[in-house]
Picture (cartoon, one colour):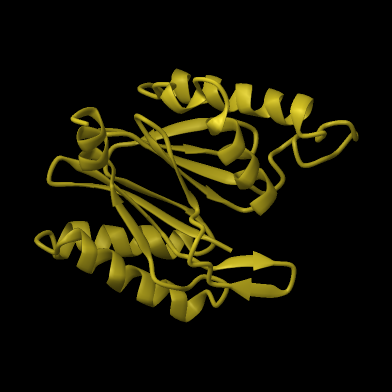
Amino acid sequence: MTIILGFKKDNQVWIACDRYITYGDLIVDPKLDSKLVHMANAVIGGCGDLTIRNHLELYISKGNNYEIVLSSKNDVMQFFINFKKYLTKTAGLGEAEHNQVQEFHNSGFMVATSDRLFLVDEDCGVIEFDRFCCAGRGEEMGLALLEYFYTFKKSTKPETMVKRIMKVIYKYQNSCGGQPTLVNVTQEIIDRRNL
């Protein structure tokens, strides 16, 4: 399973995730894979069904999809509606009455841009968050811990904050684990524009 954290700190947007991937009963800590998919103007974290996240990577690699700007709730919703259409048409999913495409089969996504955070649920519903959000296994615990840091430990650096939050989540969610991935989305997008 997955835990994805998104938060704003010091006028920058950050996204973090664990590294474990479950494959049936097997839990692996992949060194060459990530639950984060990078676009020109956003980073998308995927939790839930691995097949859907893999198809998201493939979808983003097609045509100009990498360049799509996700600057509003409507942009994000339209992107995922188009992704769902792509899955139905290209990936061979969507032919059965109840299938993985109908509701992204237990998948959820977090979209982080240089200044915004969105969660996308199984039916392409989108909600924007002003400070922080979580997705995946242990999201309630993640929200509580982020609230704690925002309220009582405001000066904690993002790297330290994520390391401590993940340590607690890993203790109680044994399907989450591995060295956390942390991305400063704001800085990554600025750096990409300056290339």
